[in-house]
Amino acid sequence: MDPRTNPYAPGAGLRPPELAGRDELVERGAIALDRVRNGLPARGMMLYGLRGVGKTVLLNKIRTDAEARGIVTASLEAPEGRSLPEIIVPILRGALLKISSAAAVKSRLFGILAAFGKAMKLKFNDIEVAIDAGPIFGVADSGDLERDLGDLFVEIGAAAGREKGAFALFVDEMQYIKKDELGALIAAIHRIAQDGVPVTLFGAGLPQLLGLAGRAKSYSERLFEFVEVDRLNEAAARAALVDPARRLGVDYAEEATMRVLRETRGYPYFVQEWGKHCWEAATATPIGADVAEDATERSLHALDASFFRVRLNRTTPLERRYLRAMAELGPGPTYRSGDVADLLRKESSQVAPVRASLIQKGMVYSPAHGDVAFTVPLFDGFMRRSMSLDD
Ligand SMILES: Nc1ncnc2c1ncn2[C@@H]1O[C@H](COP(=O)(O)OP(=O)(O)OP(=O)(O)O)[C@@H](O)[C@H]1O
Ligand SMILES: [Mg+2]
Image (cartoon, rainbow, N blue to C red; front, side, top):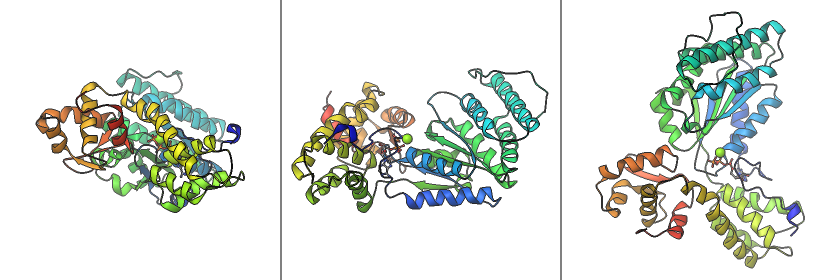
């Protein structure tokens, strides 16, 4: 088929041609937003799940819906190894520009943000913000992240709320925020939620986010709705594959659809990848089983060279051996850490640092004490294809 019209969108955070199977989650987000805007208690959402299940896409959708409601939003992706204050200041500055308030209110907000940046600069010296010497408000400038973030949110929320709006902060890859900074962010939201300030937080991250948030602040689970974003059920995966092509006059034979659903197991990223390759390989409609088979080969090849490979490239040789040993134990999804250690002919305590660094890098997580699992779906197959246990 014509590559110019290929509708599929494999990629990070790329809006899919069909946002399948997420209506209920989108609606839950919309309810939370409407409640916040109307001054009612509401819990922000924390979306957690494996790589490529569609967390970023969902977060972006909820954000677009928020903006359509006149809610002021700001969104950031937590990078590995940088401080939260450093990244949040420029992002909040962008949000302030969108608050249509009187000039005096605006200049107060910018002044307070500058003071926040300055106080944080003293503490986290990696932060680069243009700091104007303005009037001193004595707000958000104590240098205590939790308190200052709370102050800032109160000010922004009050300004946004004046026009029956609200302020919503969206944070992606939240598992990369350092523990004390995550605790400060959650505590700041907690404080303002109690005061009825129209501010809310939507986050997304790998499955370890659940435990990280709980350990940072034990009341996290009451403050936020933790929602697992999982692979698509059969009907949704089918819609994600079939509907975009059908809109362009191209159908799938049932065997082809079944083949793709089986290979992708309903993981959204993989459905996009397989759809793209089916389209590329097909010469006529309906797309048949032979095309799906061809697409499987092309898709695995593409995944091995990019989606899987970029993740493996971030690991050390020791970490790769650990991952390979996990894969040796089969498709999982969970593995006993002890079994992995046995395969490596080591004591659990000897491999614990490797396991910890893999968790830190977001390659694996621990679903329960003593268990370990890949954060990337189908990674076990890739590991078996790409190296042997003795490498
Ligand atoms: N509901 C859906 N229906 C169809 N395709 C989807 C859906 N959600 C996401 N996708 C597709 O899946 C891919 C991955 O989406 P996204 O980047 O949002 O995943 P993610 O969970 O944020 O992954 P990561 O953990 O790697 O950041 C994209 O190509 C996107 O178009
Ligand atoms: Mg993402």
